[in-house]
Length: 357
Image (cartoon, rainbow, N blue to C red; front, side):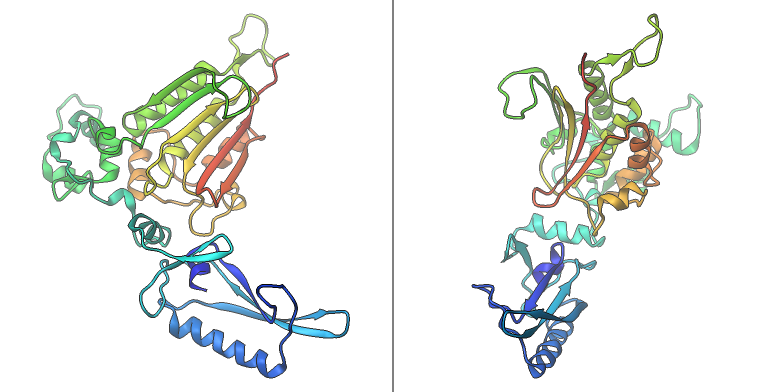
């Protein structure tokens, strides 16, 4: 039950033999006993306690009717859940395993909203790593000031803006205001590639680029890569008009911005942009958090994984932060496919390309 609560939930069937799948069934006394025992375990043996649902189901077999107990364990909202010895368990396929890796434990805290990775400090950084011109631009946006006066950037201001903490950069500060973010987090970049054909296993490509910098800088470079490597089509315009990008630019902007801002920064991996002959795929680390589904986000149900980055993004980029990005992308490009890859712990946006006549 702990492993299910720490993962995506699950169902336990009591009264079926585990190895053979044979329906053994339970007597009335057994149903009552197991029901009480499971409720006690969920409340007394798990920290914090979890809430389960039980249901008696009757199954018709060849010779008679047999009753089993169906126990539904939902994904928890107060991860990580532990046993009485303080051990953390998660699902591993059809089995379970004890969690000992600090990064995986940190992700569970992040999923429960009790830890924000973008507010954690980056070791070995200092105020010297801050690009003060970027901070000055941010402050002027906050103050809604267009004056040419210089803004005094000191440690107190940087601390108040959550760019630094204890004289070290926060992850959010690093990703938006550092001179060279990849010096300390080299994997937090974008790997962009335009393939010949439709397979990621292809050995040849048209264009390839490792995109680095702050999040606003990477966003601009990523859009440049997409615009350069996608076709412009005539659509319904006249012959003398400039062509229209085969995939909505608005949709691409929303998707790339979401990939950079809402990805799981506890995973040490880049955002990937892959252009194939028949589609574009944008892949970011981390499946949807907190039991969110594709249907949720299509309806504009916002999930903020990185509060600090969203705050910076709302001032420095064309970001509204109301959970409307995916909705706006779909309005401008209805054929977008959204894939919440739970097993691979990644989120994939797949957009078909216009066929060339």
